[in-house]
Image (cartoon, rainbow, N blue to C red; front, side, top):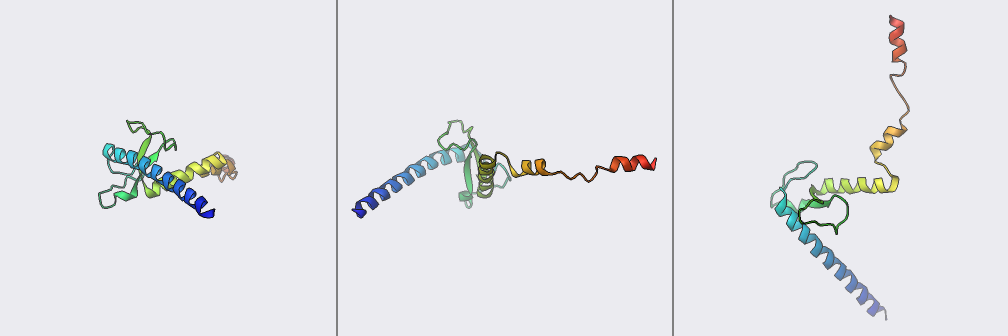
Length: 122
């Protein structure tokens, strides 16, 4: 009984992986033909030797949105792509980015008494 369940689960996982690989291969190949092999964030250039480090990022984070004109894609190196998804996850979880949080929580103003000091010197 457990063998039948395992086989069914293995088949489902294999089918899912095949679907994902087919989908990624299609838009990846199209985007590599469409855009120069340069990371859209750090401007790192790629050649055939390191092309596996260049990824296709979906700007709206929907991997099923693959318009023929490529308007939802940008090529990013693996590091910038990872950073982009980390920022997106943080935004979804907390509603803001780390930089925005720092702006709202900072209360110290080192120049608050500067106006008074300048007036007293006159």
